[in-house]
Length: 483
Ligand code: SIN
Image (cartoon, rainbow, N blue to C red; front, top):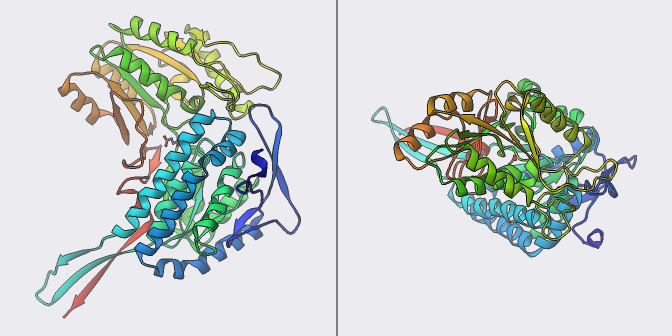
């Protein structure tokens, strides 16, 4: 039983120890597949949050004084422990988040890959020399860690969205406090146990689960010791955190909502596009910020694409993430289902047609949701403007490049986008015209450690992963030297 694992922790991880609040405050975690109680987890108050900040501050100087090579070695051990305990980490993840076990394992690999990558980058935080502007001037640029970092992380990737922020921060020489989602704190806490085993000094990495997201968020934003806040979540909350961080002029990285266009041009390889649409749309039950949200298909290939997509969707298996061969686990909450139902209903009222995947027998309050393809969807429907965050694929018909670029860009969001076609000139044109931070060309899967993940417009700013990812945790200082 996974509850017996040494990685199964329910207390806050502060200064290298797992601790409770003085008043034993806790909150429940439920398995979204069956609504059974999984654990009661410490509900951190501002006193514990302040304690975590203090411990991160105390740990900062010794940690940043280590050489990049020394920090790299500890990160490398953390990475290896991830792989050693991949089965247990994946089980904890599926238990609290619901995604199929094979996807959970995929996420642990993905999460670990950020640690491996930034363990290497820790050795390569290079400065610069600049020829002086006067004969006696020497100019040197040095890079230093920004300081104590706070990260507020989401429930859809309870492991990887933490490591993607923490690994570059620790590599740079920063110390970190994580406030994980109140729905998935167990994965975050298991990282604390592995941090101890890897040999991180006390206070370098801290995890504070809480049900009081608003209050603790405010504490993190307004505390002057914290020099940088990284957040993945909704645009609405991102805007609030930005406002709250203004008083301390905190550096921010925000990875916010998306409304990804997925364009299938008339010269696309349709089988390739259908395969990619399944991956992009239904990964994590459609609960990713980069999921295809609006699928635009050229009128010449609309029939063929929609027929093939519907056929594939009919074969998707919905169920408990621990069952074998499951493709789609439960959604995260009743509210998510109500929100998606409302979008689907609005589309149907406007004339869209619905094709459902295999019916799952729903018990009362079940969070399983049959995957859906909607055809004949138009831009005046709610679904065009909202991030669905669920297994619904709306298909829009278009007839020319100019029209589809306008439609694709007609959103305040600018995170991921995708298109399929073969003409090389068009590939360049469309890539340059799409107002998005990331463009997938003939692929539905763009997420990787080695590339800069991040959005533009109201999808936020800052890059995660790749050689750019560490920049967000570094300050650039210039030394002007008269000889
Ligand atoms: C997200 O949904 O925020 C991240 C998805 C990914 O990294 O692929």
